[in-house]
Image (cartoon, rainbow, N blue to C red; front, side):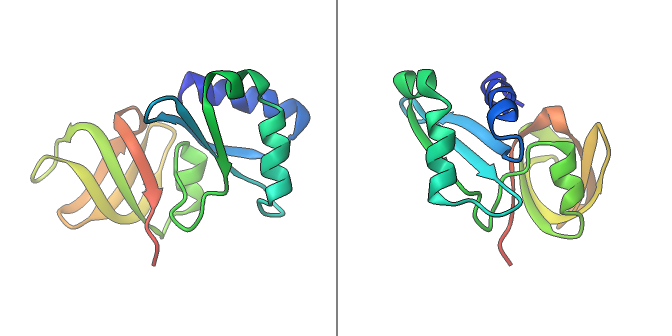
Length: 141
């Protein structure tokens, strides 16, 4: 998890404890993209409330706050565990040693420990350490 995501999570835990920060990433030329979730769903009003909680980030970045959509990002062990049995795409920082080393895997999530996620992909079953994951998300079915 990035430092900026950890900071945003800590701030929202106080003011909006039911908001889950799924991903916070800086993209392009200074845009901060924030994907959130809530047990009752994500509304425009909730996105506005979260935006108001981050005035300093709005001054330094163009801030986008939205729901995750069908291809929700997976960034924490609990995210992967929640969606075991679903298909996901996982991109790694460097090729992962397996039958044919590569850095992109799409397949069924079959395991998620505190250290790594296991995915049944085209080339077989592979375990990927969370520290090696660059980006991951569910794949729409």
